[in-house]
Length: 222
Image (cartoon, rainbow, N blue to C red):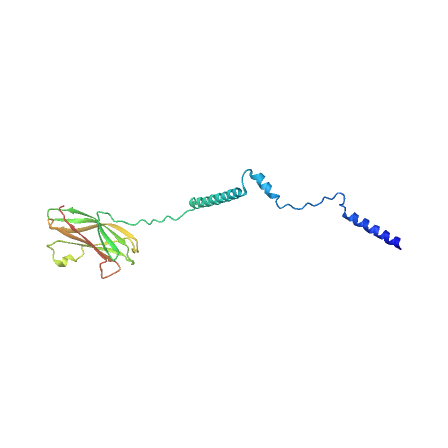
């Protein structure tokens, strides 16, 4: 009985010793070294420290972002897509014109041409005028021409000598128009100064209520 126990013990000891041996052809796994990457960084950077490498990488990344922004800006500036050409230049009257403004509507006398027919009489043959509508209403422009001197009766002062029509249906807010009209307005007493007036009205208004009045003195012999 004791012999059997001894044999069993020997077999157990042999089995334990056999399991503790490393199998042939197998490599023993080495323990991971957490400091293994540090020497690699030092070797790659030469004499640079880890802080210098980090700062250099951040600088390179910032340069790339700036360059990308510049390229995007160039694309916006150099965009050649067609754009609507809008003329927003403000209209200005001729400095030599006589301009009158009322309720943001302006009327200018740009030029008056006349002829002397004899020592007794003459006539106005051409009138140039400009209207600028900076108001908030739309109207169809028409001009009434008044001409008189001190010898004329007062009832003649308000009597139109001519009417000037415009070749437009209406003058909208923000628009302007110029009319060079051929007229024939006779006058006498060449030595007397004439009072010349242009009265702007709405052609659709039967009462001819004045919108703006522009006036100047007119001396036939000068």
